[in-house]
Image (cartoon, rainbow, N blue to C red; front, top):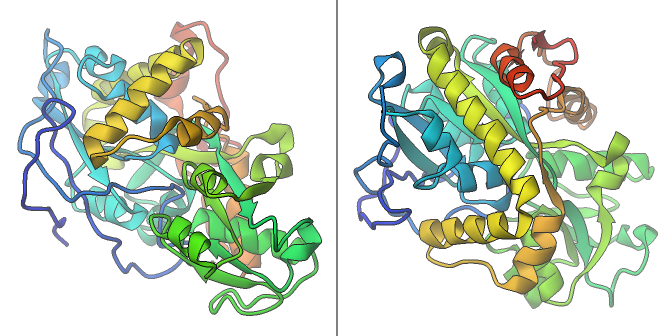
Length: 380
């Protein structure tokens, strides 16, 4: 299926090609949306790639097409893909052609249609895409971010976790990563909810992250289990963080964003993929070493992509709750799949081979950093 493109160009991020695709109705295996928060607010496209940093073209390739979301959970892409960013620098004369997506299925569709080569994306659409292609299309090649998901509630209506019973709580979409996590949390509380309808001891209201703050202000929902920056936007509207999802995971870490690649592109252009991964690793190191500067750069990227940056009261707490990581945290992806199976949203998938961390570990070794594990689900 061809990738939908918008028709009104607007220069942003200097020169960027952008794609703002509406959520596609793919068959539900684990989720319809990626594990991310805000999508882009404007549907604009340009026609030019980011200028190359100079030097030889890697593998003789003119350009590499990279997808991501205009979300803080895609901080590595926001900072590293900007003009003069560290990912661009690693690619020399090979140009980056960036595409911005609003929804995971649209990005997977673009990958399947050979419209992008590499992408930053959440775990649910990664699993969905891998299973739907019978393990023949994508590979997860690195991690990118952990954390940044919270249960935010109206403190006048909900004061304790037990008070969530009987209330209306939003998640981004049926079967997406946060929806699965919330359904699993409900089950562990011993409460019953029909996963498909969202009806039961808790009313699970599937609401697009872009409209969740308005739904909260109007009283249509009593809270939301959502990623950043939606969570911090709710707090800015008077909401209270009742639970940070990271507290439910070992070492308070769980995958929220991966880096994926088309398998045929990986085979044909491993040096390009390695260069992108080296740039990603360097960008993550830069973000960790320069958190305030990187935050400003990420917000500038958001403003360029969406037409509006985030106010300090939103971006400051949101930024602190997201950790960039090279480690894909493979064991947590497997657990997330198990949660989806338990909720009845997914037949038990065969995820063997979903990871290929060979190039990432090569880069990490060269940088003197510890290598990472595929948790038995691929090559490392």
